[in-house]
Length: 295
Image 1 (cartoon, one colour):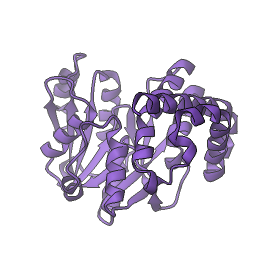
Image 2 (cartoon, one colour):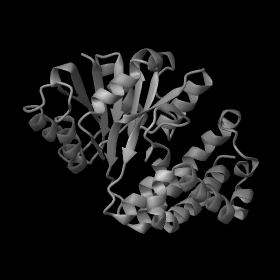
Image 3 (cartoon, helix red, strand yellow):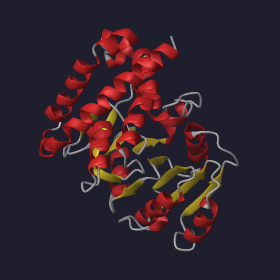
Image 4 (tube, one colour):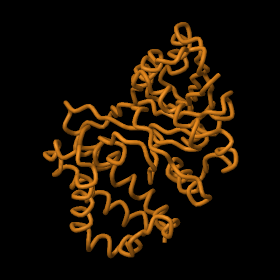
């Protein structure tokens, strides 16, 4: 057993089915890896889908949480139910490219943590803008190297490291980011694996949906930006809700320009900049709210 793929899901059976189909088409033989689906209390037929999928995926293991306990708890149940030292995490709204398992497993043979590459459907303007705003560090990058962040949608970690860290923090609202920061604070570095590609294809298809997501995500992540301010070199302006709101247009502009400047491959999608900027404005609003609610 070379790897365990852990996929946590909650009431997204329509997305889960596509994700499982992508995992059935890997370059690695099915006997060489297992798929652990952790059902976090779904009521939409997820269990039935996994039972059907298991007929064609003999390496699929279904784990039920019984009730909705959150992503961190599901992740912990998943890795404790897995058999391999190599743990690969993917979200249910992602499609794994055929050499994803091979690419991420290879990276973890040399490094304790790995972040895979993320692509976006380009035919949908909203989805493309959303992915650029949220996952730009993992897009259009072709070379291996160190990564400053990680995304739970496409990440790998050795079991020994996850156990050393005590698993995911079940009190955290952004457990993937919190885990990465905790790992980095203990001296572990994240390696970027460009061969391990997933396509992130979320349900969010409206302007309101992506702006809401940006705001809500910021209200959670801003607390980690301040908790790990020395590690992240968090600017002082991000430590005050008042300053964030006052400087929001400038913060959003600098963030948007930085995305395209640091990822030259994204310049071809420069027409996405207005909506990316709008999401960064929403991020500022959410960050200020998060600091006000958690002084």
